[in-house]
Image (cartoon, rainbow, N blue to C red; front, side, top):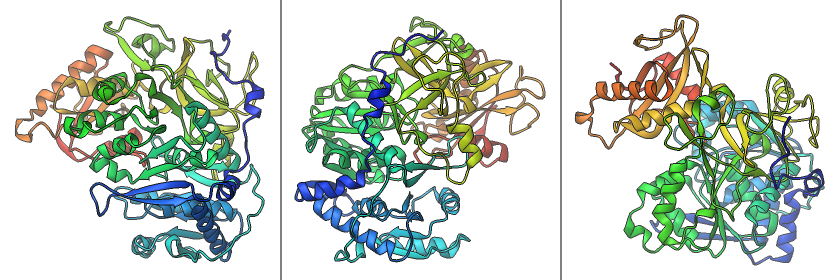
Length: 608
């Protein structure tokens, strides 16, 4: 039988105590109580390499959001959708909060000129069918071109947030916790993006849960973010958290971070008590892309939380990041591994900011069989997983997805979540909503509720008081009847040869009856069984003239065979930037598999 839940697991009473009051009510409160306090700062790097700070007080934010609400309600009715097709700046936040005041359903998206996301924008916009669009004057030509060049219907009204008459007045109407606040479209890493219906209560509660994890100080703790505001983690940490306790926030455009990553750390260095978050790749990026000269002026001692989430967390990344910035005041314990998903608003579980992250070596073969067996790190079949701590303000269970029975600690199963941050389902997808959000536990439940549970589609295990995420059910590669986690194979591949770009690898299975571009390597399974394919970007640091693709292919094949006892049906080396990615920057194995089967990958040269 399952053992007791780990220490710190919330009780039903503590969950019920979370405040579901819509955050938009707090905006008016802060505008009255602290009108001249700085609410948000946007760092604009378009004209100055060092950035220009644009500040907005709570009073100004409230006044402008109410004006947008009045302008919107003049042309549409409560409950309609409003798409935000704007660049990342303060106008985006004003527009989003204006939708909340107006009791409209925001659809946080992006300006149509954002490179690489045209197909996603078309799919999402068509699914949401918004009545109105919010944008800005500089982005308006791109929005007009989007409607001129595509078959999606034009909205009833396109409003530019920066030109809305701020003399317009809006008397706030009652907003209930169960009213829909916005549609958060999923990243689409394993399927077509779906609109997650986030209520005002979900938004408020998840901010409370993050705040409790961060142990923030009202009006003092500062959030510093570059994550896209159309992404779940970016929206909650950059918009909801400041609103929860009148705490100031600083944000920048994601491109400004990618172009010069030191900017993020420079902004954090100016804060006395700060928190921030990013996917694992950002910390890996900072470990290699910042010079010693740039680091010299940094002081990260005021950063209380560097949350790491949204993709596989690597122990090596945590170690390299700490080593790179230890002399700049970075402490091990402020690296906070976390787990979450859009269907739970975003945050589900994390480690404590007062304890260093935990990483444990498990036997890979045992994990593939569904059991967590610790082993020596030096063991040939070892795989190291980073713990994501415990949930805050919600229940979490590891469940056998077939029997719906809660599994004992140490057994791998699907991660199920129950709490006030679990959203209302998928927009216009009643069958998917029932399947994903309406699960019931069978058998002995202990103190856990019977239903409804969110089925995350993620695999995990409770071990020694922590949640370890092992992968996604849909991504599992099954070769010769044995399970393999794709991230393990990808890790092996990009460590096999310097010609493979680190972290830019996708492993997936194709049906044995599919020819694909495979070379029919010796040892392939027969027809009707799955075959393993690895697609990798070449390392641009290795000159193309010196790149021996045959040698790279042989090295990857040998490493996969040695470490996973699996035959590689095909290895494809492609050009840098060629791997399909989701809107949040994660590699999409599903899209990569589709591109592979369609012969649409930008191949450097196929494997020998």
